[in-house]
Length: 342
Image 1 (tube, rainbow, N blue to C red):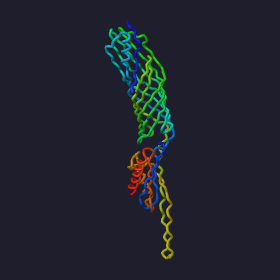
Image 2: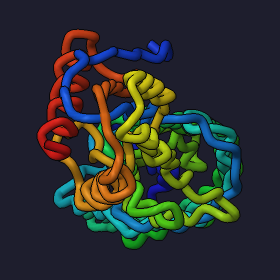
Image 3: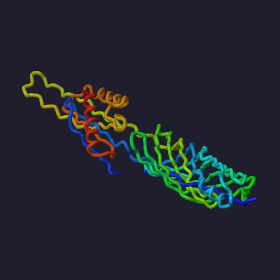
Image 4: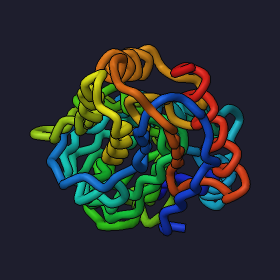
């Protein structure tokens, strides 16, 4: 009867904060005074806690060469080899989003189980299986891209429990059938996150866990998952502010018999009307949204009886993207407001 060491191994498988403001051209000769301004689309927000769950596919790589070499050193030739390198993994997590860019997240993960089977000559079999679960603590970075879409990256530490099960028959004898190992190691990940609304976010991620397999080998297990994230107590998005210039009141005409010509009407006071960019346009778009048309209709009704000299429209974009691109976008937005009011 030949004694075999536990030959289970996993092989290695292989994310300018300066705000840019661009002033668009002045245009639109009408009757009256007013100003429309669009604020930055990515304002900072206060922190909030969140929780979530993930589910997906975990993958490992069984090192067949190492296992067969181990058996061969014991005088056993491998005649057949099977492997099970995929399973379902999941996570339960919670964290705190300090600002739009940085969060601290911790939770429990279960990567499932993986295994192999080897048939030998002289006649014998060796079967192995490993189960992996543990806890983790990560720093998560977020980079806004387009609209509600962001890129995310994470780096952190995990404490995993690896529990192995080995069995042999015939010429193969296993000395330690149930080794286990608890060890701390690193984990990393990248992915995309989409904000459906202020209360629900979804993520798609690829993460790598460095694992000690309980028999002296180190390898990587990858988890490809989809997550549902629920913020708690997150402040609602600020409502657009609208300031309407007061109606113009014409001067009372002098009596017909008066010889002195009427005094010129005083120039109306300048007024500023501000709309949030989010209320008029979708991110990276110059087409006025239905909500934006409603706001501009309200502005037009409130100033219908007012006499104007000029309306100056200024368009602004967010801090992302090259300056030349944002200049063109802000000009298109100002032109869109002009065309709609005309």
